[in-house]
Amino acid sequence: MGNPIKEKSYKFAIRIVNLCKYLNEEKSEYILSKQLLRSGTSIGANVAESQAAQSNADFINKLNIALKETLESKYWIELLTETNYLTIEQGKSLLKDCTEIENILAQIVKTTRERHGL
Image (cartoon, rainbow, N blue to C red; front, side):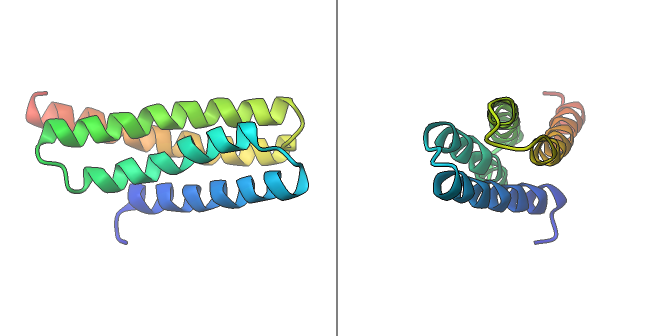
């Protein structure tokens, strides 16, 4: 791929898909995992969509949506951890990846705004 945020968000989406399969098959958990599946895969989808943005404002908008999805994903991961569907170790690992993506997205948005006066 050659684009670090695109790669990280794609790999995170794969982790989320596999986690949701595990939660459905092994834990019979369908409601929370569906919410996490939607938000966790939406991060990468919005990052991918930002690559074809029509303007800098559109680019920032797509990345801001991805950024919001990281916050929602963190919420679902924390909830799944607190309700013992995920181990503390699983939750920490997922939160670490999600926070890393969040920080990168925030920096890209900030830098783009500064460079283009938005």
